[in-house]
Image (cartoon, rainbow over all chains, first blue to last red; front, side, top):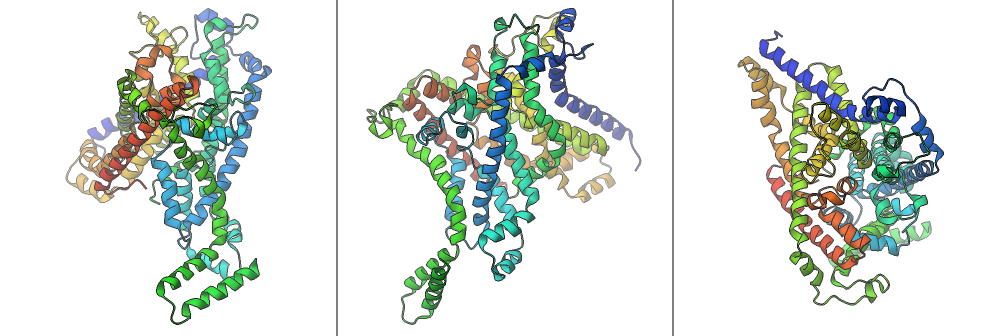
Length: 285
Length: 329
């Protein structure tokens, strides 16, 4: 193909704009990382944080991890992520599989009942009262159970199950397999890609858990990472610790990096699955 | 158990053939058989349904606190009914914060939709025009990343860039001879910060769906346009954009359906007392009134108002969306 003048101009504009998008997407985070590594002497010399410091130090991380707060919050968040995701997956599969079966009596009623909860939400206060009534307030379960099933993920799963050929289920049944055997031995192994995708969505949701902790958990020992980091971020400059040689801002930046690191490290590996997930979601159930 | 099931099967499968039975009864028997056959499926459904009944439908019962003078000590049933029953709704509608909350919710949400949609469409067009596949892959990977960061992390990033004392942007402003701006505490700038951070977070993620729509356009159309002498820009204008017009309209309408969802967590993490006049949305206000001031009934009434308006908006949006051959699910 002959490239015209317009072609070259369009290409130049497109490439410049895309590089700019790439830079805008990562630069803020890189700056936070660099600020978290900047030693006090550098800040004094430059009169503030610069994009690339001349020397770096891990002092801020050392201090954050030596105080009990952040390690404890990391444990809480890890627990919520592991146990929460496991529970999410079990409940979502148990819900999606029966609903994917067209021969289930009452199927449309159940579907309507769960779809309605997507449209109408009783609101913050009534939900709080239910969480309180079920005894979850101020326990780690308050961050796991009230949001244990995302209707959207159930619909994605259900759509996937529906598209598996019926013959597989039929032949297994002729061989005498029960529903639980069919689900565990046949359906689930065939669905690994979609299970991985929605599992990752659930896990990210748990790692970023903030709102339910703010709503339902007042106990300091049970606060997850995001809540502790947010508290650290709003700590005023005047509360600066005299006996540490670190400015509050450096500590804040280090806390952000600690909260973001698992996402950043795992992200490149799972990126493809997430993208697939979006497309799965756009399929009508 | 298995024996029982066999008996049931024998009984129920034989009965339809029995002569002289009224058809209604026959039908009922067959339904019973179908239900019995599906018993394992119901066992699977039991736990999830119990969860839905408790944590999704339970709160709907809890909505009655909006019509009561709710008192934590007395509980939902023990608390006296509000007099008149619409007391808290009236209190909200006639209060001074009614307009303020509605305006803030509406504006923040609308700005987010407009800016988020337009930047994502632009990125999708750019990615589609990119002839270097490695560059496209890189930009996609990098721009999807912020979608997975929590609002707390993004708030931290915003502080690093915008804080008046140490923020990078303010240092640049100072170097250019300006005075630092307290972006996060200024009523003039706060909404801009909210909208910009939202657009940043979902710039790449939002582009995925438009990009998929562009890929679905018939390549023959571009071929024909090239033969007719159309350049790149005219192809974008006459083929790509019209080709995804329906998707754009559909998604826009559906987003309008969630107009009252201005982003509770986002605003809650970012805002502070100084910017309440421009930042306080229905959700944050309900949270403070209910769980901090313990005025449960008023907060529940306002929440219920929001849910009802939200429901009508979604239904309206879905009806509109059907016109463009799309549905909510």
